[in-house]
Image (cartoon, rainbow, N blue to C red):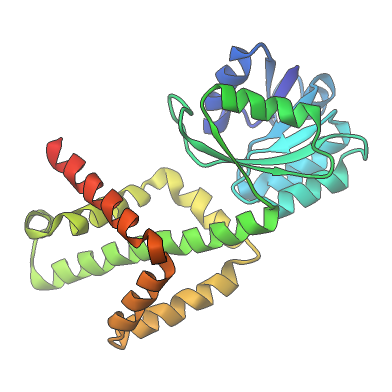
Length: 270
């Protein structure tokens, strides 16, 4: 099968080109100024995968979908790209959505990829899924709406991490304390949270996460839940929130705590 990756010179293209080639597929990389052109590459390929920034996804789909012999995408949101692919591609062409839950990595072994099949996902889409699975990818099948609602929640989890760091930075500045000194006396769970927040502040993530919030139709509703929760914590109702968390985890609470314990133990051993 000939696979055309639109935007293939980006991180997702660099990761997946050798993966497709490893099982015998030929890979074309196309872009706005490539040769062959976007349209010609789509015509030549058996399947085109759109892998461009979220803000450019709809425009690129509108441009290439009419010429495709099958189309999928690597977008971090799933509802609007799938709707666009179904709308602008020929009715007999295959359509499916993918969201690799990783950045530029050396291997996808053990890493998750969300797969959103459509009523037009057939053998070409299944061939891509098989290829990812053969390379160690773990496929999670979801409906597009479920995926985007989950992404809205996860974006707010990331926001909470970053806000925690901002509060820490401002507090340190006002008290004349150093980050290193606070890190030194922090318990291990707090150190891990600080490290996670620092990782999320990587400049490589800025555009992606900004656009995931901007283009997700569910984000506003999830934001309102976050604001209500933060308000309760500010009002000193941490106990109520903690009880809700314990109730949410239910029988999984101890296993989650055990995983956190192992993470801290592994960190100490390094």
